[in-house]
Image (cartoon, rainbow, N blue to C red; front, top):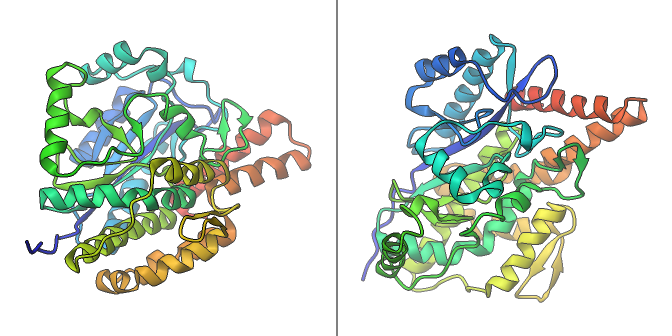
Length: 378
C-alpha cells in the first residue's frame, strides 16, 4: 500500500535549570512572581518541570528548521531577560556542575506528586534536563516503522549533544552523565520493537489496564510515538548549551526520519540491529561523546566519529536539500572540531584550576560559561 509523504513538521522542547547569579548554585524555590512572568510572556510555550528549579519551553509546530531556530532563540532570550530581573539566569545544561539533588524541591502538581511517590529516590535524583524533538509523521504504522529503525542513529545524536560531564561537583569522566541518572527509571533506554501501531496500542492498553502506568507519556524511551501528537519524539539528547548545536541535532534527526521514509517508499528499509549492539554505541556516546568513534556494524569495527558523520551526510543529501537545512546539519562538523558543551565545561574547569582557582571557584566559572553560552552561543 502506498504511503503518503508525511509533513515532517518539527517542534523542539528544551529544559533549563535556574541558577542564582550571586552563588551560581541552583535556586530551589523560584519566586512566584517569576513563574507568573513566564506564564504571561510565554503562555503555552512554557511549563514547569518536576523540580522547581527546572523549566521547559517548546516551539510551535514549525515547517522549517529556520523557523524553529528563531522561536528557540526568542524563548531562550525571553527566559533569560525575565530571570535576570529576579537575580537568576537559565542554563541549558543537562546537569549543574555542583548542585545537590537533595537540596531541590519538586513542583506541587498532581503528576509530579504521583511520580515522587511511585519512584521515591529514583525520581528525587532527577536533577537533569534534556531536549526533545518532535517530527510530524501522521500515518500510524509509518510512525512505528520509523520508530523501529531510527534507534540505530540515536547514539550519534547523543554524542553531538552532550552537556553533562559533572555531577554534584565531581568530574564524572562521562560526556553525558545525565543518562546514568535517567536510566534508573523504568521504561527508559532504547524503545521496544512493534510489528504495527495496533500492537503498540495493545501493549500500552494492557499496561494501563494493569495499572502499571496512567498513559503512554510514562514510556520514557530514547524515542517514542508521542502520546499527544502524531509525531515520533526523539528524547535521547542532552539539552545543548549552544543554540546552533541544538538546531543541528534537530535538523539531523528530521532528515534521518525522512531518509527512513524514503527507504520504505522505495520498498527498502534500514537494517535493524540487535539492541545489544546499538546499546554499545549508546554507551560509547555517553562515555566519550564524539571523541572515540563508534562501531560500524557493517564493517564490524570502531570507526572515527567524523568518518561516520561524513557517511551520514551522503545518506541524507537529498533530505538536507529537501528541507533547505544543509548548513544546519553540516554544523555537526563544527561540533566535532571544537567539541560539545561537555568539552567546553571540562576545559573551563581545568583552565581555572591551572590559573590557581580552587575546586569550588573553578566550578563556578563553569556555571558562568554556561550562563553566557546559553543565550549568546559563545
